[in-house]
Length: 78
Image 1 (cartoon, helix red, strand yellow):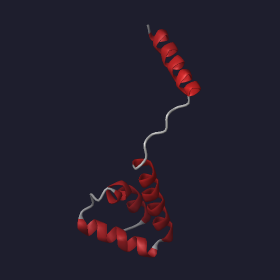
Image 2 (cartoon, helix red, strand yellow; image 1 turned 30 degrees about the horizontal axis):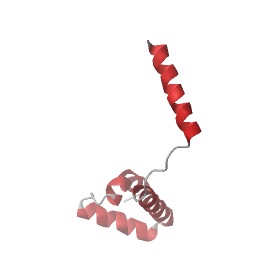
Image 3 (cartoon, one colour; image 1 turned 135 degrees about the vertical axis):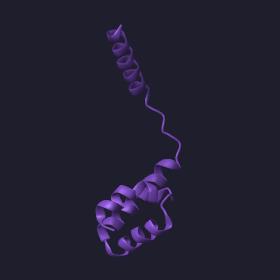
């Protein structure tokens, strides 16, 4: 396995959806490739941070700006 294949299979690996042989090859590559190990570790931590947290509420000003922008866009279409 080479680095590009690790990146291509990253999501499937983190989701536990890789074929066992492919998972084994990827993990073998990670033992010898510090760059890919860092990428996988960072991606895993990022997923853990964002998937285990409740979304933060938008500040009122931001919510109003988004609503205005959407309203203006809708009016331009009609």
